[in-house]
Length: 93
Image (cartoon, rainbow, N blue to C red):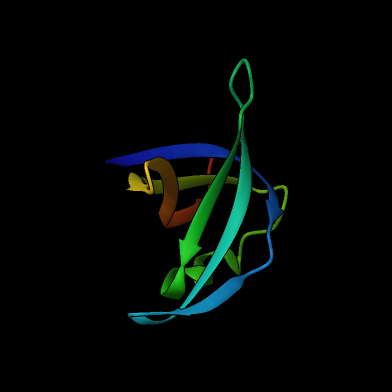
């Protein structure tokens, strides 16, 4: 499922890395706040080669983020991941 979100980048969290069965991985999460009537804060992650997309985006910028939303089950619990595959500064702002 692919969705486009728009909001103000309010925080970039510290990168996290590790080693898995498929090799080394790196992840960074960031928070945007939507500009709806009732604003929502959304935590979005970028992985591996996509981390570079965040380098030219500053906290406070209005961004459009294309994401994939995926849920998976582990030990009878469900986990949802929102992964960005495109981040761009909003040209309208």
